[in-house]
Length: 359
Length: 117
Image 1 (cartoon, rainbow over the protein chains, first blue to last red):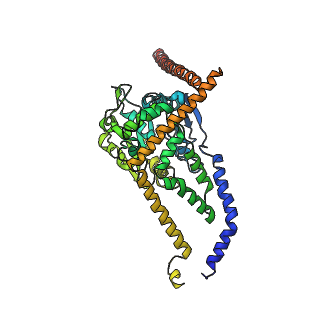
Image 2 (tube, each protein chain N blue to C red):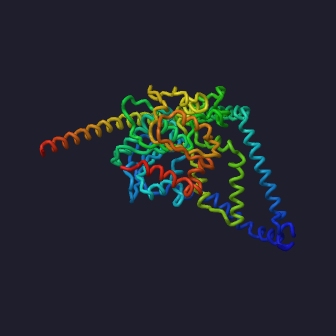
Image 3 (cartoon, rainbow over the protein chains, first blue to last red):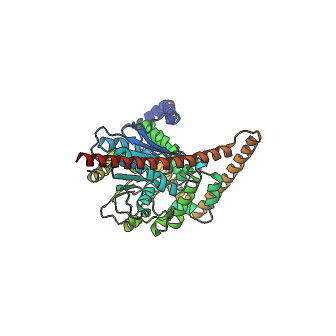
């Protein structure tokens, strides 16, 4: 390296700056054009805001269908982010008959939708419709984030002598007890008038939820992401399609139905009702000790939204004999939807399901 | 020069490393800051105020709108809620019909098998 090299590099960058700036701006401005959730699907059932989709596999090898359930915040398209980086696409290529619950965009008229509507009606009916559409008697349920908690609640619900049709339960980055985290510092205190806020807003705007999520790591979310993209553009290593699909998904924030939101805050950040077995939905007790399905729990080492310690008590509660735990490095979303997931996590999930989805 | 050949960083790389360290430290400091209960209180109060202001603004506009004898947001929400109730009832009726249809199908199959044997 000669002494003039740094100067040559600086001049080169200065010359390329306008082009890079244009490319960077173009990536940011065309983010909305990114293709998200492109896998072909059909509508199986709708009720209120909820839609059940089916992704048919042309090479179906497993009798037990898989029902995917995402959180009440953000959109379920994260399961099908973009072609080549889609868990749904991967699972149907592995021969699974995949269904997906989409909670839609709750509005002011859905303000009175609570967790019991989500668990006892929407999820229960989605399970029913999945079984009817697939012709199966049992299914696998895979929940992510709040969706995982809803699935666990669904399986832990008191049904008397009746059994659920859930054979396998896969729970990705699931919060069970959120009292130790940053969220709890914000909303766990009784001073925060959760009833007042939800009543005033009706349904809590998605933008407010997104802002709170981003504020947990403000520098990373408001600065580092954009700085890294700029560096990628400068170095020629930026992957616009990867950035744009994720950015588009992150920016798509449906409102959180007011009643469900305040119940969630109490359940997760104040009472830890699931741990104590005090949660009742439609008068029926939710007791996680009732869960006896084959269970797969996936936790992420760097998860700041549902930190691992908030999931671990789940293992002490459930009655399942077949329990597996994948604990991997990664964040709350990146663990399952990141670029490394296709090699490092999805094959493990598919294998776990395949071993339990025959006949 | 010999130092750099041995893996030492160029001035540019050193500047970048320093910057990234500073950014990482800032990020940690901010994360510690937002994790404090006092920040939580600030955020909670801001959320409450924002929600209240939004409601006041919406109600004001809605009042004006409805005084013009036009359907306001409250009317649309009320209608949507009625639609929801109807949809709930229809869903339950549909499920009952499907259950009955399944039962009838099973009974017919049973009769057919009995007749065949």
